[in-house]
Image (cartoon, helix red, strand yellow):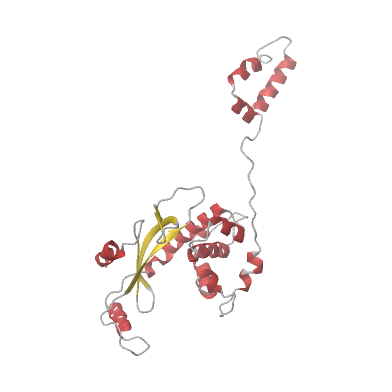
Length: 262
């Protein structure tokens, strides 16, 4: 806009013989423009320069390709809590979901996005800064990858977590009572339950939805949420409930929720 005004001013000055409107526009215009708008008109960028944070992409070339499913030091499961074969299944499964159909030329490959999310889920205390340096992506990208992964998983795989009924319930009860070891165990058992207090990482430049509480040792604090899960005799999840923020109180409200929902 400022450049157009300048051109208009020069044009009017060369075509007019006297001090017309064009030649006198700036003495009247400048007092009405504050300093910030004037600098913006000049094309000056008033924002602070973007600070470049150190990152490394060597993990994808020096470490990730060499992870295997054997019991060596570089076992794939040690990094992501799943085997490489399951990881490859997830990549193939989620690549068909609209959330991962990215057309931008600089998009992060889907296998890297899923690996980053699995690392975050497997290591709840791994902060965004260390993930940014390790995987060579921004902190905001880690958050976006997580949202994209969870949306696709809930859309494609949510049906897998379901409470057993009918013949499946009988099969689960028999599985608990007569395990492969041959020793009779729990008769009439429908599930094995456990709870945990999950600590969350603070998203970059966002508020926290969960409250901060002191840890059991009283020396640390973090955003936490209760989690109750149930699984069958084959260690397949049949019920998952994320409770309210705070210290664990599963034996009351969480178990009541399980019994009422099933």
